[in-house]
Picture (spheres, rainbow, N blue to C red):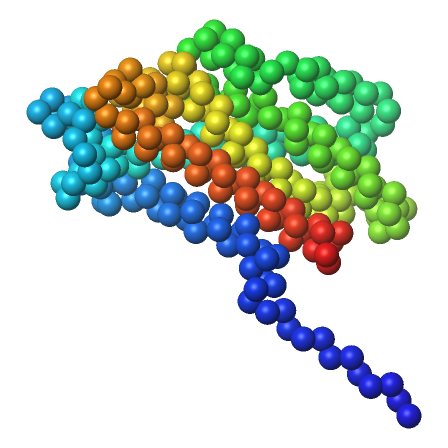
Length: 286
């Protein structure tokens, strides 16, 4: 008599939420942020830079949903327009870091011992210095602008991606299908692009999600120090710095941008942790 078939029950909603809860929380938060940033000119009805001394430090109302700051500017409008700068800097810098790190990491793992040593020791040297101190030095030298912020943050995070791609490539390059491609005469560029890169995208995505949160913190910190986008462009970090000097009038102008920074960084960190649990087979089957 044959053995009875084992029927596996489908995972319950509770199990799905427990397994993918971080992604379920992160994606709606980031979606709301992205919609607010892209649709800022339509969704908010106030000029983020319009001064109104008569309405300074007002509490939330129908006219100003989150209140006004110490100069009478609408806080919601400044948050929405500030989100455009924050997301642009985070996305562009992470894309730059991922592209540079993927190139350097794959070349280091595949080119040979000499090239590997030069690239990886250079990356280790960059990681020895606190990123924020290097960013302050470089931005001070180049001058504050959105382009300089993207370049500085992107370059500073290249070593993180390089190390991830390097270790992942080392684990894959000796597998049978890579050896087969090499035996068939495929070039190194073709092997990296066709055989290796598609199989190391998971750790790159995870690292990108985590790096986006770090990039937002760095952009906000530099803006707080006056090294961010030049005025009158609204920036969350500058909003915190300016409102901090007028805390005796109201706490709301400093509370809202601080909360926006915290929630956005938390959302990216949750997304990174959730992607790691989802894409890593060792964690996926827990």
